[in-house]
Amino acid sequence: MELISGEFFPGLPVALLPGSFNPPTIAHLGLAQAALTRVATVVFTLPRTFPHKRFDGVDHAGRLALLQALTTSEPRFAVALSDGGLFVEIARELRQLHPSTGEVHLLCGRDAAERVLNWNYPETLPFSSQLEEYRLLVAARQGEFDPPPEIECRTERLITESNWDDISATDIRQSIQCGGAWRHLVPEQIHGHVAKLYGAR
Image (cartoon, rainbow, N blue to C red):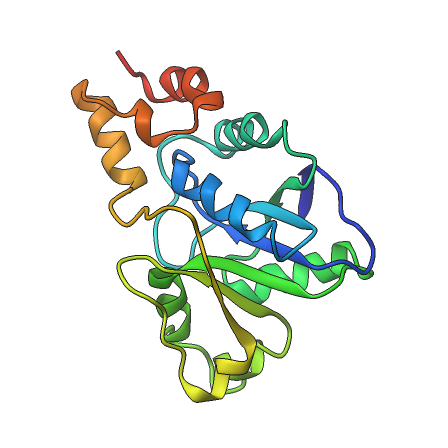
């Protein structure tokens, strides 16, 4: 893991928010802001590769620039580039980078939580044992996350002020390409960056 911007506080809890951020949306920002009620720092984490999708479109440098512009006004936000794509890999990278970090939370929506829960892990690394290394902090997204009993004690529901069920970075890119409305779905502080990177008319 490479820390691009921001800082950590020894002994205090951290939330990692992994994503493709292609582009960042108001849902990403709202999720991170809500998590600040539970942790000292939220780290917007861009993996170099993804276990469930291809990396294409705007490159790492462009997406990191978007994240830095998005987080610069909040001192409790950080930006990092991760070598791993799985939650457990990202959590381990953080521990290696900052061994004094407090409890690590993986911040996500219901859909991402169910995806990582049902991923085809090797028998030597069951998901329940991975959660000994971090906690899940899960917001509702098209429904609440209902964890199985064996991981319930390592899962926490994150309450958010708004509902972002219908917000999709894919839809935003399509709207930009078609000349449709998109700015209301993207944080205001990165409107100019997004327009330039994605060729908005």
